[in-house]
Length: 225
Length: 225
Image (tube, rainbow over all chains, first blue to last red; front, side, top):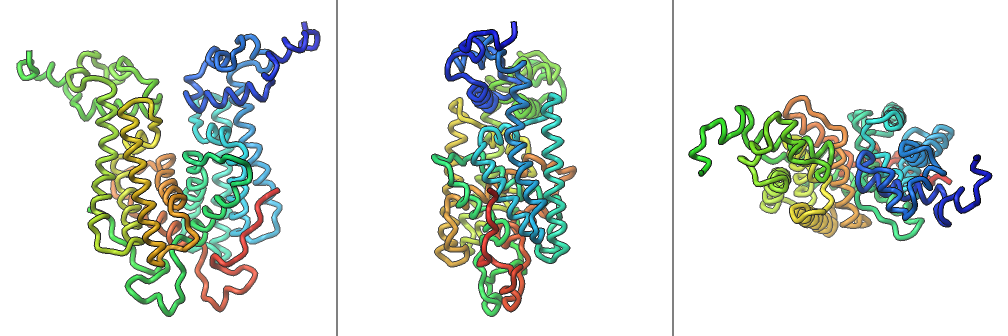
């Protein structure tokens, strides 16, 4: 019996439980309990439907994970393609990448959260980790190019800078809860202002020789202990 | 029968399994499987001892969690006390706090990782979250004071800046694996250089009016889409 021969209610589960809502509930559970700690039985209970109704939509838990991770990865791939095509200096492409990533993060918050928690226990997870690593290398290459252009400080290590920059962007999933769409731009502004231009007030050179001088030539504060 | 009356091997578990090594194994498991997903049976299996041997050291799983979180929180409390006593402008106390936190993170990496993953399902977790929130407020107050001093940009929102700054610091647990102690200083340098002074090269004012000008008055790159 092919799905097309089933009545619509059996083909699609209960009304309101299409693939998108099954996926949303799955991602919610994966984020709450971990992928390994979530069973198809848990998902059925959360949706209030029989386990068999979920199998009308997907082959199993791993397909749900795959669909969920693709949603985050596809968003990032779109931004990355645009950045590659951008006729601008590397430092500006890097800033565009940060802003685009914050937009993906806002639009796909639970999916990006899941992606960031993937640890690599299954083929689907390992494939996602490979794509994250390729993304990190792309960022590091942009940083290195911007250093060669003289637009990023020459003492900035490309890979460490890439990790810190997207560590900063990704840290937002821990506390950012947009109550409506379109709040990503002010957040991206705050992130870019800190990462590219720094928190410290830029004072005119003539004032920068004092004990509270601005700028990175100021002696660093001593660490504790 | 008091513990003192037991022979040493029963009082302390097998040789090499004192409270510190039980705690280290517990934190390793909590980070791998989550606190809720780890049982005392799992811990006994990991240590290769009987469950009853663990109860010679602690009353149960929640005490292990409490001891583990205290190790991270005590480190941060020590740094915070030093920062409060520091006779320096707020922006320098803030930088000292970042450097001190990176040192705690290096010295207590698994314990800080556990603290950052706490979600608040038990009294011990909720108490730890309260201390994290108090720490966030302390950071936000320092940011606000530094803004009033004119040392941090006036457009920086204190709470968002506090969250981004320690989001950046804490993101390091995702990738930082020190192979020996004493690597925290270069990492703290990279974090402070990015957060306080920005990645972008500081060019002399006379060069900053060009299309690739440095500084935060530069028009921001447009977001995608």
